[in-house]
Image (cartoon, rainbow, N blue to C red; front, side, top):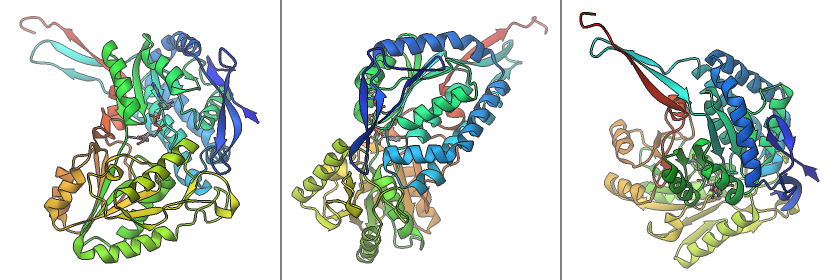
Length: 480
Ligand code: NAD
């Protein structure tokens, strides 16, 4: 069994008590590696290493830091097949999904923020009261905490702006999918990335995550994960007046109108089931105008039933397993609950074993006849399961879309521009796609409203989060 390390001060290290956690392969449902079960002592050691590295890293010019980020991006690109194999094995995702989307996006994250950090946020003001200029200075040592659903993609989405802005980082990847973070740290070491600037402490959220959040020398926390954990982190950060950004759960509506364009069906099937529904942006409540409900439902169920479930390396696999045994049990329990709540299962509804694999596979599941206030429709399930709902007019579609504690993303499918603009303005969420899904310009703010998020990532928002503005005012002579 493979054994990975933590990376503190540029060196691989065991946890302070030499304890390990098993890492499972979701296709077979069996452990295949061990990752360190880090402790609060490991967090202390990583913070000390980051503090020691901070003066040199923060004093570099933006273009010097950009060079390092670009070198790291280049090194990932050279090893992209190794990263893809590593991520796909750890998560059970189809290899093509990782190769074509997730690893390229991790590389793009570093290149994007390498370019962004050479575009200064600083401003100057004069002629009203002296000469004023603002500096945007790095915070110091910051913590980034990431989930298991897009391990390297989401970790680098936080690391890149934090480093670009001049901070030194302690990263805490999910203990369920720790492998690509380890490969990233190994890659950084191979290219001579400055020691202590990027530290990775592996282990459980309750121990390593909590120690990182409460550490007094950690000046900000950037978190992506569940709303439950986000609440806990927010409380600790509030007590310390620590900067925090929280990217949390979603229960995203897709609104399909009578005049939806032809590609709607195909894109919505992808939006529902990509990564086995384990993307915070997946559409899981599909609202369909009553005039087209019956036809759309039939076509959607046929397309969902035809998705090919299998192992990552099997040619043509479109859907892998879900990522852990507790999550597998959770998703199945919600399907059982949907039955109890009066839902009709139109396809799927059960665990499956494609080609005899014994891992955590669940057939794509489509359910109707559930009221919007049912638990199934209110809770984030985060698996290959969606519910269909009919609506009669725009107002009812909006009311159903907004009947959720979450507000991350929505998609609207119509060729009526006026309707699209109204929906975009009135749906309560951080991003609305019109006739598309998952397209992202990295310069735009990213995040959710309501219980989905606090703060924004992306573009200059991320650089602002990882810096502190400081105003300098130079007095002018009375007649100057
Ligand atoms: P999770 O909240 O269980 O864990 C996320 C991370 O937090 C992990 O690294 C975990 O170890 C750590 N953690 C757990 N307890 C902690 C604590 N007390 N203190 C500090 N850290 C702690 O989430 P998950 O199950 O790994 O990921 C799935 C969730 O992530 C879903 O809710 C999904 O919607 C959400 N997500 C949101 C976005 C977004 O952009 N809004 C993106 C991806 C995933």
